[in-house]
Structure formats: structure tokens, C-alpha cells
Image (tube, rainbow, N blue to C red; front, side):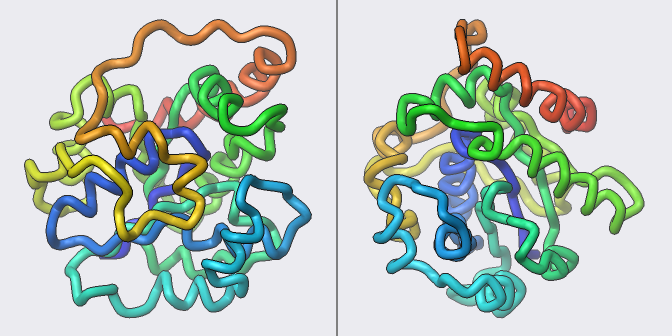
Length: 239
């Protein structure tokens, strides 16, 4: 099974990739289209040149690899995708060969976290509108809503949330998904030094999140603009 997990940044996406890598039967790929996205746009991201140099800038070749042989001859292939990377210029037909899942997080938490790493984010930067668009496209192919899982539910009860996700995917849950060694991983993307500081300290999912962060000014307006997209997908979430 090829599992494509679609989220915006700061959505617990790296921890989820670590969880699937810890299964022992699953190859993982960290943000396959990042280099292609940067190469095709004028977006100024941290470590831009290093990311392009380390990755595959041809989106067609990335799509072929996403649907090609499983790395390391594993039985599962987990792909951590960012919704903002799937720009309209990229052919999305490869997604029909994947099991597409949507990982969501409340926009107030995303904005509060993202703004610590990159100033003045826009709605396009945090991926909510693109996530809803991809969700609708996949739902149209399937004739039903694809799987949605909320990071808040994972943080509140990791084992229950991952058991539910595995059951919905039709794969075995493994307790090894609940912990991983601290530090950088060999499958981390080239951008890990800028973005992955907190998850590199972790050895498992953190506990339940507290109250929503209080935002003001442009950050509050950004979270408000993203909220309808989040709420629409949240209505379809597991559990």
C-alpha cells in the first residue's frame, strides 16, 4: 500500500512520518515534491537552494517515484506530502494510485507554530485551501470522503488514534509506532535543520494540547481565513 498523507506545515506531519517509519515494514519519503515546488515557483523558503539541490526538481519524475517500486522492498510506502507543494501546474493523476489521507490541525495552532520559523506567512503558505481542494478532488474520484485524521486526536490519545487509522487503512497496528529514537533520521529532508528541532528532541507523541493560542493582528486574521477549510475537513475526521 502506498499511503499519501496530505497536510500543511506544522501539522504533526513529521512525527507521523516517524511513527510509520518505526513500524519496521514501511518505507517513508519526506516531502517528495518540495524541490519541484521551489524550482517551479518564486517562493522564498529557508534553505531554498539546498532543498532544490538535494531533491528532484522534475515533478513528473517525482510522481513516477511515488507510484513506482516500494523502497527497501518494504510492504508499505508512506509519503509525507505538503498540500502547498501540489501546485496547479503539476499533474495530479498519480494520486489515483495512492491511498490518500488528510492530516489536519486547527489553524490557530498552525499559525502560532509556523510563525516561529518563518515570518509573515500567507494563506497559501499554510496549505489549508490547497488541502480542501485536494480533498474535494480525491472525494470526486472515490465517490466518498477520503480518510481524515486530526492531530489533536493523535496528541490526545496516540494509540487509539493510530489504531483507528490503521484499521481504516486495513493494515495492522504496531505498538512500535508510538515511539522512535531521538535525533535526526536518515530519511529526513534536507530542510530538517531549520524545521525539525522539536521533533528531533522527541521520542514519541507529546501529550494533549492545551487551549488554543491567542493570536492578534495579521496572525489572527490568517487563522480566521483558514478556519472554514479546517472545519469542513474536520467534519469528516476519524473518530
